[in-house]
Image (cartoon, rainbow, N blue to C red; front, side, top):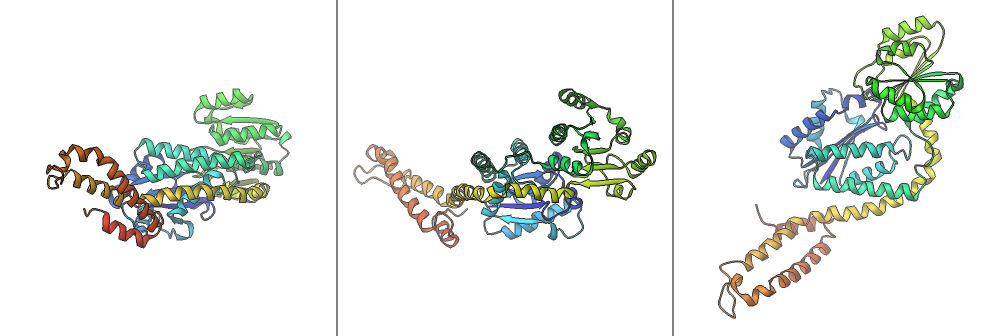
Length: 420
């Protein structure tokens, strides 16, 4: 009924993940492709620096999971012009494994830093976009809403997100191990949430000098004013890097922002002064070749994994508690999804019973009029129908284990569901 294709930091390095980044327009285009060629009935695409995840729904294609998964994977590699094998980098899930993954994701258990909250906001944005563009199906919609409920409960009842840990925090911690930040000048490139978090963490470290720049000069000026730091025009990016010890990039740009030649020129002018470049972006803003330049140390988001593991150890004591809560919410959601598989039979039963009572062929024995015209019978119509059908539905749910028993489900739907 639901499927997931995930290309995330656990299986795919940044140079692979960046090839599967989705812009908003690309989400709409890909949805059109899947809707037209694979009859996908719902879609939500989550595209962040750590993952691209494609959630899809195919309620009217039970039993065709493998075929649909293969088709969507093929559509994905064709759309992204990826000519290598995707198998080593992709994680595929169907059914309850999809909802379990999303619940864990919202709770912060699948993040590079356990318990981080940024992923929740990113899922909310992806969900709102899919809803606005009429891409959602009922199961994905209910699943996402239930995941938010689960995540909120876990964050309220555990310590899973307590303490200042995030990718931006890891970047600052890494920088502090290489430089004395109280004697260091830093350039923050970007004006989004990650950049603001980076600035906040740097200020707590009593940074010597902090400057911000962004393509949108107004945003950079507003941030500078809010935090009492300097800002420079984005056209001065190269000179800003030259004047800094560290430059931390966290933008939404899909393109390289500074070239090998430009950084080489900067380092020639700096003589032997070291330069740390931190790239928190996917796609990357800085080419990997920069690390070949003498005096330059380049760290991308994957280079923070060791520090992330330290933060993981701080929070892992809360994981088992969070997983217990997830199991509870998951059971409730699974009951709802599996019972939906009985809907064709239940709806058909209602229709068949109503058609029988409203038929021009069935007559009442007491007055010899059609059932639909008999006042004595019509008064009891709804009561009788509800009593009969509800009793039958209870038995159907019991026999099929609420839709979980696939063999029983097939027999029930074959008996009661109308042939189309």
